[in-house]
Image (cartoon, rainbow, N blue to C red; front, side, top):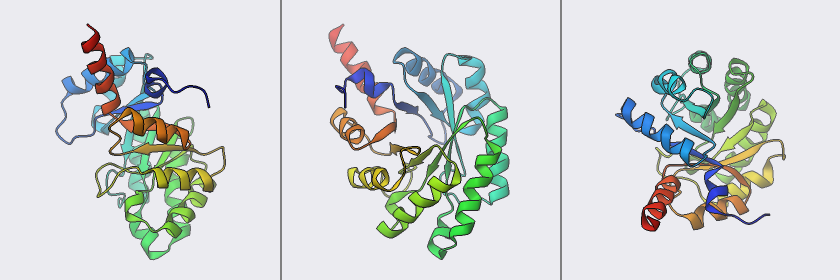
Length: 224
């Protein structure tokens, strides 16, 4: 693996703001920061997608979340929400799986849920959030198989809204149990450059975080 620098970390960050009361002004600031520091995308609530797309044009990828954060919307509503987000300008979609189906062992339904969103978002990047902190190891491994079968582009550790975020162990497991065609996104609680570097070494090719940009801003201010 090539040397990991702050710039290389920033380049795989989905600069994220998913707070329920975030304002349009905050979203514009997020976009400005992501453009300045060459982030992979901004990850924002669906209601802000159209405005953010108008604001950034082709300067930045817009990512949004579907069935977020609980994942228990119906499959039809997730598919509609995803198609709506794409029509509003979303380039990337991060969907939450139906954890009730997982706990019931309804694996065909879990797959169908993801496939419906995949069909609604053809041409856009799809990341599937499996919320690792709520799963057994066996469930995580099974979901690696299902996400890989679904045609999704990424498997993602966490929403950041449940009882735990990304862990090194989960990223390592996901990378080991998914083919190279499925990338891994670590999200939730990534608060230091050291953590970001370790996630990258373990195979994560996207990081969902706002703190890495804050570190870059702090370093820039110190040098000023």
